[in-house]
Image (cartoon, rainbow, N blue to C red; front, side, top):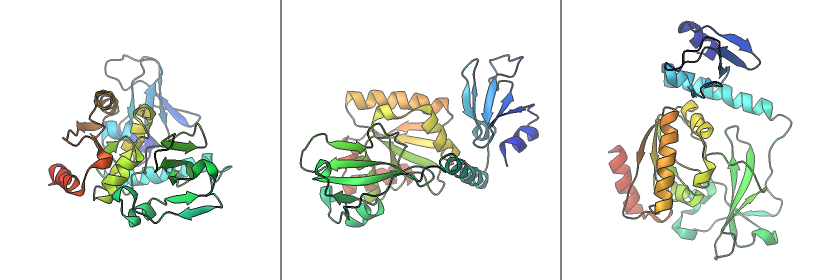
Length: 275
């Protein structure tokens, strides 16, 4: 079902305008006499430019998983069309696949995330990962120093916009949201393959959470560091999730670092969440 078909099914009057539909605000607390809400014709993401009410049309009205999959493919096509002038970043010519097991991560897990070394002096001593967006395009590289060098993480190009990573595929009902790439990789390595990372708590916003909703996610388990800063950020992200219609829960464990969680603890967490 397309956005236009859903609007017609729900008897919502709309005016096509550019790549959007203009409608009267869907916020029941906003008596909108003049249409002041824009809805993206592909994704269904909406926002009222008068009262700032925002969300996703398909989540707002409810939708089945197969329709979410169709919409996700349309979204991927839209992103590819917009980026047709750029094919994204390429792997460096001097790269070498990483085949070790640093931090007790299995070599096959590193291979799955395309980890590599490179000879560039700025990247010596780092394990590097390509970061891909929903279209599969490489938008950045994230290099983690393994011998205590600084900075601990190096993102290139500088200022790159980092997506939530990895992209949720196939559609699944819930995800575990962690801060760092090694938090995510450690959970994947030990069996929780629905973990995604934010690349820092300041790198997350409602638009990125809306993307999760578009991909079929309806629940987010927030597993940030157990210190005060991490828990404060978790509460902030929880509020954002709720504003875009995602159910949330916070994960609290004695071992508060997802990146150092041993295999037995990960299995216990998996049983606790999913039985």
